[in-house]
Length: 115
Length: 112
Image (cartoon, rainbow over all chains, first blue to last red; front, side, top):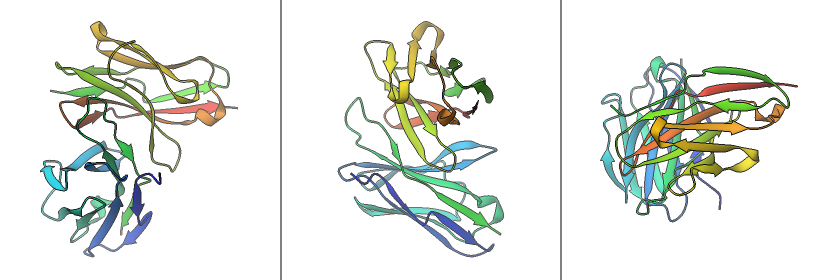
């Protein structure tokens, strides 16, 4: 199993530009999570999908952030326009929800730097 | 409110020393508990997990954790640390059906 795959691994962009982060969950998993990690705030849940449907987006900072999951094997997190305060590591995680023992598995993350 | 507290933010140990990292949670329902490790520049990896049964859980790389329900704690232990254990350690609680609450992490540095 390849695990959760994220791309790009590093992204440097200028303020105002659109940024798209990509995630491929583990095959067979039905739940996908986007997290943001910063020194100040730690690990924050941004949005959670179950069976490709957004269930909880209460952690999405503002309208500049949007996420989609068009199918079970792909999700995107978009920031438009990007701002320096968006600089962070963005993690995608997936799990198989439906058992009492489901566990989240994390991807390698995308380190985003907005200049 | 649901929360996870990791009281030690930074820990420095010499190789072969014993390790215990504290984790306390605040959640009234049934909990599932996790420890994740993040090596420098890498993603979070699952170290161990507790769902039910024996409150002493053994994980990878010689780590173990003990769930003490009366103390709302899930402390991580290792009898003898190695330089390669240098990493950041996160405790997490699954509260409800999907939401994981993560602690702020403990940075462990092991001196060779």
